[in-house]
Image 1 (cartoon, rainbow, N blue to C red):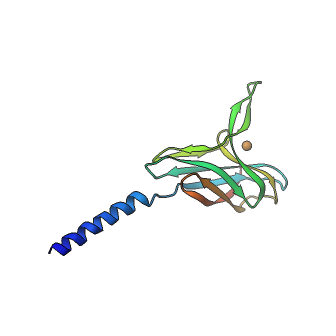
Image 2: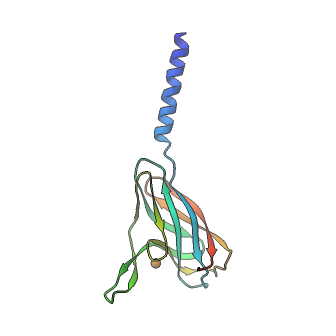
Image 3: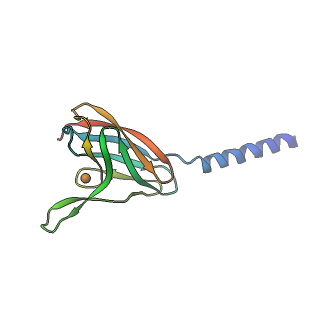
Amino acid sequence: MRRYVMTGLLLVCVLLVLSGCAAKSPTASNAFSYACAAGGDCGVFMTIANPNNQADTLVAAKTDVAGRAELHTMVKDDQGGMKMQQVQNIPLPAAGSVELKPGSLHVMMFGLTRELRLGDTFNVTLKYEKAGEKTVQVQVKAKN
Ligand SMILES: [Cu+2]
């Protein structure tokens, strides 16, 4: 009897440890870009949900279809318009989500190595401070 109780307790402990330690990765969904010419620059947008009760941070992005990728946001310029500005990282709140969307935060790809046509898909690898690297598939959509 005592053995079963001990085994049961052990199992509960293992489950607690697993649920506490096996932090889930942030997940990016609805990743999209617009059609872009080869050699051009192109923004990538998506929603990133962080299911963990610990904050994480998106620190970098890279892709095979561009020379390099940066994290960007949009800020007001001196003329009252908007301009893109590089950010060092994008914070992901605990149990929250961040939307990368036109006119706001985005992943910026510079020097496309190929044309991105409507309906194409390509991969972008996101690097999180805690969760490490995760690859997301991006769909090339029409601008509405
Ligand atoms: Cu940009």
